[in-house]
Image (cartoon, rainbow, N blue to C red; front, side):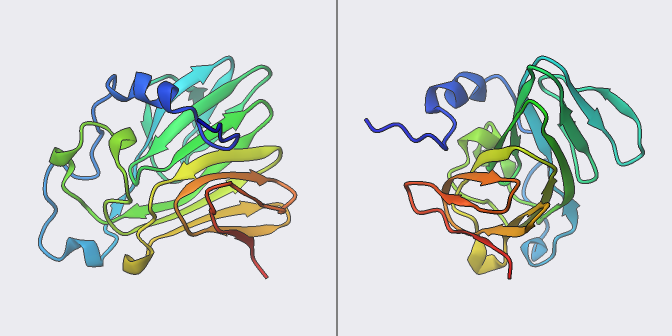
Amino acid sequence: MKYCKYCIPAFLLLAVAGAYAMPGVTSGPGPAGASAELQTKGAVQVLIVVGEVKLTGADGQASALYRGEVFAEGGTVSVGRGGSALMVLSNGATLKLKEGMEMTLVKFRQAPFDQTREETYLRLIRDPSRSNVEIKINQNTLQGEVKNLNTAAGSTFDVITPKGTIHVRDNGGFNLPADGAAEKAPDGTNSTPAA
């Protein structure tokens, strides 16, 4: 089996997958026609925290970030010395932050979807509904995986770096350095700097 240096090891994700129930974008099937509108803030669930990691909410309140916490757009995660964090978004994407990293979830809107089919966001094999994600990073790299982004429904996943915006549009792992020069994962993830 070939190892993907951009992907989060599957065994690690599966080990924590059963430990968490899905926090709600909705608690069941969304209302008829809801997928056409992005009425709801998407959720980010923290799976693993190592070392010093803090969350500053949209209200400016800062606190230590703990495993199992859920936050929405406006939150900023800062990783201190020797720290790291692994998070999963309600659209199935995963993000890994390392020491010195600061990531702000500028925007995360997602149409309601039926969560009764899945036990955890980690088990999603595709974006379950239209979602628009905009993340801002300050330095170092952002590693993660996007699972079959629903581009046909208008889903987007953008990462703002000090050098520009990178648009992630396909399925697979990605490694986005803050210098704006995206690396493609071996599985063909399409990550391109904005013009």
